[in-house]
Image 1 (cartoon, rainbow, N blue to C red):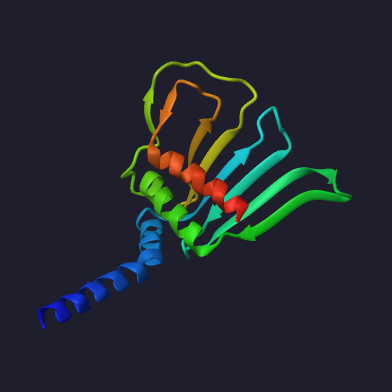
Image 2 (cartoon, rainbow, N blue to C red):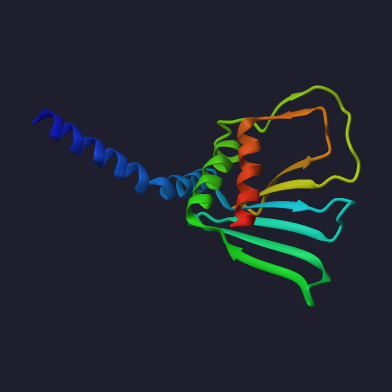
Length: 166
């Protein structure tokens, strides 16, 4: 009987955790007065007309947009694409993003060893749009060799890559 009760209690706990995942993210957005968040990666000097943008909404949706200079590939001109990210990738991205930029529970940069850099690399811009018409912005130059990024930051970048491939 005790095993049955403990099994039921554990199932209730697990189901409540799974169902409240999006609610936590919405509460994080509301708690920190953020309307939406944008992650933008531009092409740098190497690919100047290529940009990728993810928009995170309090509702839990994540929208991906790619904008490139029109060029011909297989007799098709490519310019702009837009899609919503799958739920499991979007949920993981929102959790890591919320930990780093909303709750500040995780760091983005662990250490700066030196100021060496590589030219012609991409830039990463994070913008938090707040309800009081203010924007909080984080900018990263991805060519900085001396910067040690946190595992959570690398996980966020991996999830961004994964969201493109899906």
